[in-house]
Image 1 (cartoon, rainbow, N blue to C red):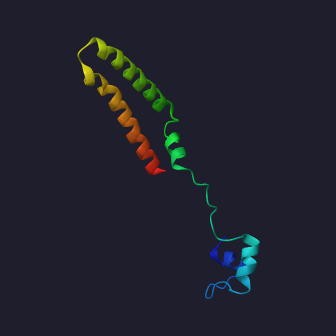
Image 2 (image 1 turned 45 degrees about the vertical axis):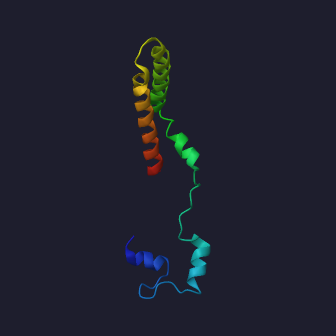
Image 3 (image 1 turned 135 degrees about the vertical axis):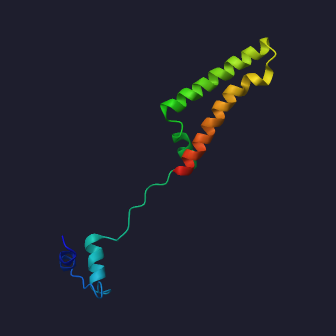
Length: 106
């Protein structure tokens, strides 16, 4: 449609707009408010949990758990101590940072 057709269809004067007491209530009743519907807001916990729904993230969580498990039993036999836990801590740190960025973007 051309802009002239739209103005004619809605009975609008381009110089004055809609008549506030006559046309506006009728237009609102017919077409509703000029407003987008608000979406349901998600809680912070829901947003955080959604970040861990990805398959790759779950694989990394499992690998971090296995790495912690192996580091715990390996640290009893060797003298590595805290250095055995570096890998799982790095994996978990990356996953937490990823979740923070994901929630921030949402």
